[in-house]
Picture 1 (spheres, helix red, strand yellow):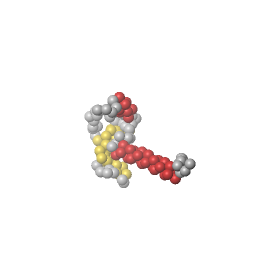
Picture 2 (cartoon, rainbow, N blue to C red):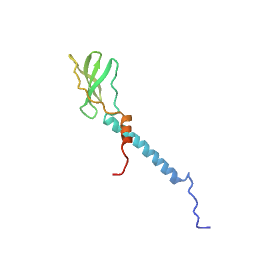
Picture 3 (cartoon, helix red, strand yellow):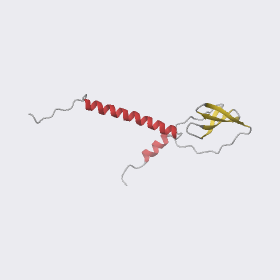
Picture 4 (spheres, rainbow, N blue to C red):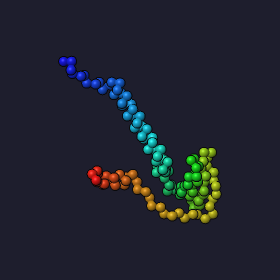
Length: 121
């Protein structure tokens, strides 16, 4: 009966190493996705529905951006950078923004992907 191999223990060094690498890969994937969403501004701050709201923003550098903020009935341009936030100019007349079609949310995208026929071309 020398030809029978013993089954590997679930707590062997190889199994624990594989489990550890899998967990590290999953955490890395989560971090990469969150970085990509932040970079693409898909998970950015939402516009407020109260008295103060971010109307639009423009990146002018890796850590700098210009933001148009609505405060009550007036609007203010604000510069945001590594050193902090600086009010650039209060606008005497409010800027009217073009209506931009909202990107579909995650639920709608998931529904569209699930409706697509899978596979064979």
